[in-house]
Length: 170
Image (tube, rainbow, N blue to C red; front, side):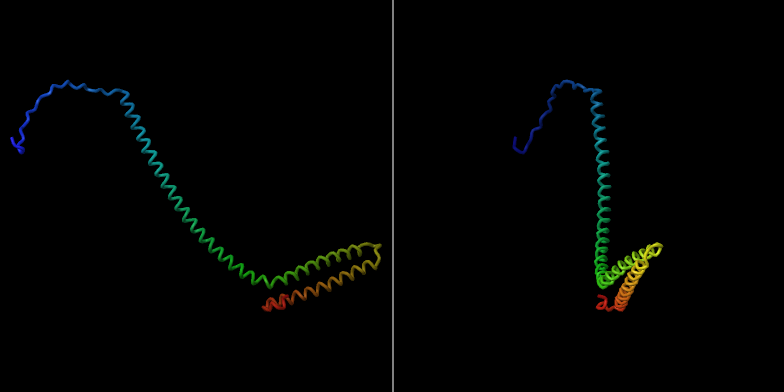
């Protein structure tokens, strides 16, 4: 026999015992059903979680888009506000002396009202001396003169402001 030749081997029959057939018991079926139910539950849970995750991702993308839009609106509003404040500052600056004069005029009008009430109260009293009434009239006339002078000054300031000459406003 040479190395390249292989001799055929005859099969030998080995005696075997007959195999015992295994039977399926009820607890095997229960375990199989529990496992199938657990697998089905895991699949449903995974699908639900995946759907929830996709919904959350879509909501986050919408919120991010809305946030970018709102930031753009806010940026434009801030720029507009800064521009309006700059314009208002230039307009309000010459108005300050006019407003101060107007406040003085309002205060003087309050004093005139008080004097007018005093004159009415003194004039309505029968036993009041004429000197008290005349003094109240003199005070009211003095306040009216001051009021007219302040009103003329305020009118000149407003005219100067309208004409654009802010040097005469102060």
